[in-house]
Image 1 (spheres, rainbow, N blue to C red):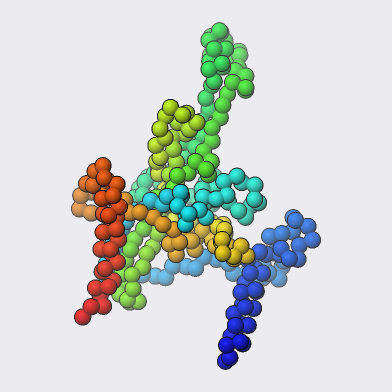
Image 2 (image 1 turned 180 degrees about the horizontal axis):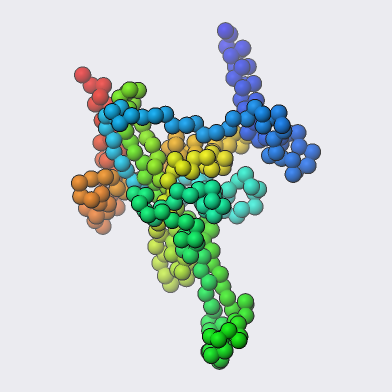
Length: 305
């Protein structure tokens, strides 16, 4: 086969794939038809996440669970963060909106309070931590004039004195993920399986207060394998080719992000790196690299005779 014929085959394959990526955009007569597939496309569509293969316990020669933090200030992690304005259509959402909307609609039900997945949570359990309602100083002064009437319900405070704060995608500082590195002796390679993901959110009662330093928490853990169908339908922006968006499921499974290890399972009760490398950020980063190299070197040592 000549090089020219091979190039043409690759080109037409990419064009046909791109046509399905932006479904019906070239055939739509109105903007409402963009994204709606025809009956012929639906009959040929088998767009499901690639299922995980079965891995027997005896096939795992080595396993190590690690926790990582994904900083959204890093450019490589921008596809998880943007867009934050929410005005680019239903197909362009940040990862935070995808997760929260799916939890609210009941599409994701495997939600827990920590990365060990012991105590399950519902959307009602996390709703209070996502929004807050407060009364302004002017409203408090108004209530003080006739406190008994307000307490009895005869009077209600005006809406102009009530402020509501909701956590949005731009409040997310990053994500914490937990996953398992394991060596599959059948295939003879080191693999990674993500187990959970949680957005790092500030305390909603400290948002918008300049005199309070926000602290970020990851207390809403989504069990990743149970959320793959939702994440596969949501697309992240591909900067190299907008006709070929990346699903969040593919982005996370293929580790197309930059993360720093902050904990590994260990005999000390899975203590954090910062617990034994105190007040030294450089040493914490070096320790994270040491853990990474320890896992990576195991695969290299397998082929040394």
